[in-house]
Image (cartoon, rainbow, N blue to C red):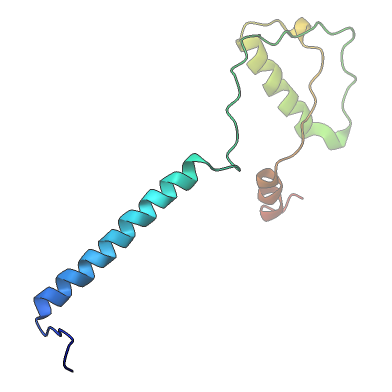
Length: 115
């Protein structure tokens, strides 16, 4: 092998290999930061709302729930209690409606045998 410089010093080989590995890791870290800064899938921050929600007064009381809705009656009572604790009167509550059920709650209900 004339013309090529070959080293057999293990310390020199180790130093060259570690240098290459750490340089590549630093370059990957810099690349990750650049991708993080220009990420098009990142959600935009929303401006905080300064308005307070106004609860309108109810015109008539809600009809008595059926036998299958006994748990809903307890939930409504807890929600009304929480709203009254926040300073509103029970006459100011117009309606209480469920929103879309999240996947986590649905999964929890399935796992516990309720749905």
